[in-house]
Amino acid sequence: MGAITAAEEGLSSVLILEAASKPLGKVRISGGGRCNVTHACWDINDLVTNYPRGSRPLLSPFSRFACGDAIAWFVDRGVDLIEEKDGRMFPVTNNSGTVISCLRSAAKKSGVIVQTGTTVNTIEHSGDKVFLINCRNRNQTFCANKILLATGSHPTGRSISTSLGHTLEQSVPSLFSFSIDNIFLKNCIGLSFDNVHLILIVNNKKFEDKGSILITHWGLSGPLVLRLTAFAARVLSENGYKAELIIDWLGMTSDELRNLLSHTRQNYSKYTLQSFKPFQNISKRFWINLLFDLEIDPLTYWADFSLKMEMKLIKALLKAKFDIKGRGPYGEEFVTAGGVNLDEIDMVTMQSRICTGLYFAGELLNIDGLTGGFNFQHCWTSGWLAGKAIAEKNNS
Image (cartoon, rainbow, N blue to C red):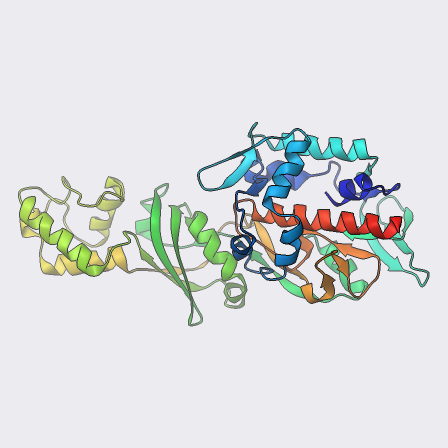
C-alpha cells in the first residue's frame, strides 16, 4: 500500500525488498484464506475503540484514510467487497488471492519494483541523509533517501528500528485462545455459545465483556475470548498466562433463573431433567454433561429437583469458574502487541521524529486491533499515509 501510493503520487523510483519468495503471504492466509479486508465501521470514534493499543493516536490517521476510504481504494481497482452480519468485509470472491492480485497488479502498473528473496540485514543512516541498506542473502547494498519499514512482527524490523534510534514497547502475543484443562469442557468440544458474559481476573485486574465463544480441544476460543486477550495481553504475559475465568452461560440474573426453575418445577413436574431442558440457548449435550458434572442424575424428575440441586445449577450456569493454564496452541496467535513507540512517530505522515526520512507502517508500530478487519485497516491507513508523505517530500 505504501509503495503503490508513493508511486501513484509521482515518485519515480520505488523498490520493495521482500524476504519471502512470494510477497503478501500473510494476506493469503488471513481470514481462513478469504482476507478480512476491513470492517464496516464508519464513525472514527467508534473505530478507534477496536484498538487496545494505539486507539487515541489513530484518530488523526483515520481522519484522512479510514474504512470507507479503504473500501473505495479496492473498489476503484476492481475488488468489490461484501459486508457480513458482524460487519466484517471480504472480497465478493471470498478468496484472498483477489486482494493479492489487486495489490500486485497496482504495484506493477504504478512502476513499483518488487525484489523477492531479499532479506534486509541492516540499515545505516549516513550524514548526507542517505540510507545504506545491506542485504544478507544476496550480498547487495542499496541506497535510498526515504525508507518505509513495514516488517510486521519480524524481529529484523525491530532490530533495525532500534539501530536507527527508536525505542520499542515489548512485543507480546495478542488475540489468542485459552488453554483450560477441564473434563466438563472436554466433553463439550465443538459447542458454541452467543451472548455469553466472561470475566477474566489476572493479578486482581478484571476484564469483562459479552459475546460469542467456542469450546475447543484445548479450552476456549471465539470472538469474545480473542477480544479479552487483546485488552489483557500485557498483564496476561506478565502473569505467565495464568488467570481465572468466570463464565455466565445464560446472561440472566440469579432471580430470573430461580423464577425459571420454579416455573419448570410447577409446569413440567412429570418430566425428567434429561427429557426437558428449560434453556433455549444451551444445547442438549451441554445440558446433560453439566448435570453429570454437578453429580445430578439426569433421570431426576423436575418435581424432585431440590433446592440444593438448584443452588449448584445456578452457580454452574451463572458463575462457573475455570483456571486458565496458558495460551492455546503455539503459533495460533493472530497478532502481536508491542512495537515502535508511537510518541516517536508523526502520526500525520508516519515519519520518524528521530530519524528524518524513515517511515513506519503496520504491525511494527505499537498498534494492534481486534479481529474483524481492524488490523488490516490500520495497515492500509499507515501505508497510505506514509506513501503520500514520501512522495510529497520527494516531489517538493
